[in-house]
Structure formats: C-alpha cells, structure tokens
Image 1: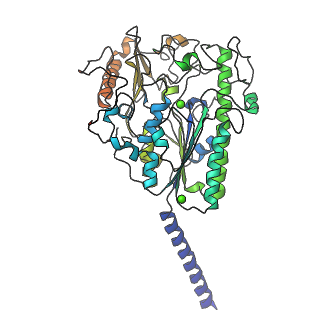
Image 2: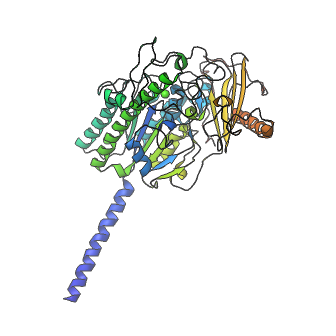
Amino acid sequence: MRKRLSACVAAGLLVCFAVSIAQAAESQVKRPNILFIIVDDQSPFDLKVYNDKSELETPNIDRLAAEGMVLDGAYHMGSFSGAVCTPSRHMVMTGRTVWHLPIGPGQKTCPKNIEDNVMAAVFNKAGYDTMRTCKQGNSYSAANKKFTVVKDATKRGGTEESGSAWHGKQVLEYLDSREATKDEDPFLIYFGFSHPHDTRDGTPELLAKYGAVNHTDKNKLPAIHPKQPALPINYLAKHPFHHGHPGLRDEVSVSGVWENRDERTIRNELGREFACSENIDIQVGKVLAKLEAMGELENTYIVYTADHGMAIGRHGLQGKQNLYQHTWRVPFIVKGPGIKPGTRATGNIYLLDSLSTICDLAGVQIPETSEGVSFKPVLMGEEEIVRNTLFGVYNGGTKPGMRCVRQGDWKLIKYDVLDGKVRETQLFNLAENPNEYLNEHGKDDPKLKDLAEDPAYSEKLAEMEALLLSEMRRLDDPYRLWNQPDDGLPPVREAAKPKKNAKAKTGKPVK
Ligand SMILES: [Ca+2]
Ligand SMILES: [Ca+2]
C-alpha cells in the first residue's frame, strides 16, 4: 500500500514536472508582443505619476506605472520645424538622431535603404504581425505604410466616432480578428492618438468634469470654473523674451487660446487637455482589459509615451516649440515581462531609442541604421542611465534657434534668434530648481532662478557651453550660435534634396 502510494506520488510529480517543462518551452518560443502607445502633445507634468499635484485622473496609465517602470529622464531630441511632431515621429520610426533623418537639413547623411529599416519593416521581417492606428499628417508616411494593417485618421472630436475612442476601436477590432482567426504570431501594435493635440474638443462629460468648455469665441474669455485645473506651477503671463518664431501657429492661433495667456484662458485650455487625456486613458483601459481577457497581457511589453511635451501656460508659452523640461521631456512608462512592478529609473533616454529597445526586448535584430541605444538594461533594473549627456534643439523659426544640453543636475538653454536681436542664455540646477523658475517668477530663494548671470556659476556656465558645442559637433548640428566657432560650416540650404550619390552612412549607437 505504502509502496503504491509513493509510486503514485512519484508519477504525479513526474506529470507536474513534464507540464512545467512544456510550459517553460512554450514561454521560450512564445515571443513577446509589443503595444506602443503614443499620444500627441502631452507634458509629463500633466500626469500624476510625474506630478502628484496634477488633477488629471488616468487610472489605467497609473496601473501601467504600478505594474511597470516609470522613466524620469525621457526626452525627444527636438525639431528643425514648427511641426515638432514630424521629426519626432521620424526619430521614433528610424531610431536616427535629429540631424540624420530622411528629412531636414541632415538628410544627406541618411542611408537610402532607411525605409527597409523602419519600425514596422524590421518587425515584419522578424515574423511579427504589425498594425497601427494614429492621426494622419505631420508624420513619416513611408514608414507608416509598412505596417501590415493601417487604420489612420485624425480624430480630435468629442464623440465616440470623431475622438480617441475611434483609435481604441481600431485596436480592439484588430485584436478581435486575431482571436477569431486564432492567430498565434506575436504582434507589434502602434497605438497612436490624435489628442490631446488641439483642437482639444473633449466629450461633454469629461469637459464638465474638468470645468472646461470648447471655447470658440475669439472676442471673449472663457468663464472661470472651480473644477478647472489650477494654473501650472511655473505659469507666466508672458515669456520674458521672444521665442524667435514669428507667427508660430501654436503661440498665436490655437483655437480657444490664440495669443491669450490669462488665467481664464489657460485654466480652461488645461481642462480641455485633461478631458482629452482622460479619454485616452479610458481607451487604453479597454485595450488592457482585452489583452487580459485574451491571456496576452502578461506577455506584452506596453510602452506609454508622447511625441513631445507641451507648455500650455508654463513659462508664458502655449506650444511645443521650446526646450523647457515640460516640453523637451516626454512621459515614458513601460510594463512587461522582467520589469519589476512599481519601479522608477532616470534612464536618460531619447524617444529615438525606442526602436532599438523594443527590438532588444523582442529578440529582434536592431537595424544598423538605428543610432538609438537599447535601454533594456534600465528596464531590467541593471542600469540607472544609458547616457550622461542630453541634447535638444528647436529651430523651426529663425536660425540658428534654440539649443539645450543637460548633464547631471545642470541644464543650459541658449536662444540665438531674430537675426541676433535675441541672444539669451539660461542656466538651471534642476535638482534645486526643477520647475526652471526664471527671475520673472519672483521667487525669494536665490536658487530658484536662472543662474546664467550669476558670477558664482561662471565656471559651470563655461563647462556647459563647452559641452553644448561638443554635442552639436558630435551630432552634426549644421548651425553654430553667436558665441561658438563657425567650424567652417557651409550655410544650410533648408530645402536641400539629398544628392544622388551621397554616401550612405550607417548608424552607431549615440550615447
Ligand atoms: Ca505632436
Ligand atoms: Ca498572423
């Protein structure tokens, strides 16, 4: 009897053992899915995970953060065009740096075969099913077309059909069809939204929640409402000097804001932004629930990010054409296999690192044309950062434009615009002054201001100036600022087409 019992136990154990081996083998062959969520124009400081004072409610994004990792140092490298979306989305699709894109002043350095090496092309070759939905325009259409299933349309309305729910529906229907056909291939879904980019027409319920209205009368100010979000912490009624892009759409003609920077306008517009952002969160929640129901949630890397940040009253600015932290930084949250829940890291990543990183996570070969750095080691808790120095540019207006550089706690921003009429330098210690308060914010604490004019920091300023120049040289910035050597650079011809026999350069990881 005893013998029989132990034989039974042994047999049972054997079965268990065999089952767990089979499960292990299955999980080894089952490659992870990628769900890449990218919203249009969102400051990280709108989200509670980056700013606990924010009134925006995003339970599903909070859930991603609680089950994954939040990166505090995620940046977009910048833009040479007022349509900041366009270079940003080229960087996401190619993994190339801002002066090496297939568009813009550095296009002659971009390899001709770049379209075979964009995000969807790479994952198609690796046997992934690829699908996208996103807004149309201000994007990289040749790369977008490479997705096997494309459901693009610009949806910035306040209804199910005209707003963010439409993008969510495309993903849900795609997942339904995979279920119906029992498709077992891994997938890459690029889940883009058209909001919270203006026009920020929210749904009636969410607008009411944030006390906002879809303000359209240019001759009136919107009413103040107690439910509207508070003014941003670094709000100014006016930026202290001209940003250098006369007539810039985002600063003068956004419906509901125009050139107004008063409290009523800004709080109403933030309420609209929040209404649109919460609606996005609702759609994200539906897709997470669907993945869970399909049993795919645990085997999916989910990225949440934006193409760049946004001002909306911060520093007296409204648009995305500046290099303060609210606009240079992007939200970046990743959940997925091997990522410890509820963790944070600095990262020091660029959005353009996304391609190399999702390839690395999926075991897909990183294309040689990508200059991005995989930050998988950060996600796996093995490293805190992937680079020490970060560079940013905005020069879609007058040239050479704005530049910034960050290293450790220190950040330098320079403005050389309007034919030399504006030549400004700002120096911030972000550990002490994370909101980048200027003298105009009127803080009593002498640390809470721009330190560029303070002789006590002249050595630090010189160090940061040298660092900026070295980054501009390293990244092939075709411009120089007033106080930099010209390096014998030829004048930039803005509309230059790539030369027929231009030698293709492959990419190297950019630290
Ligand atoms: Ca955008
Ligand atoms: Ca398939």
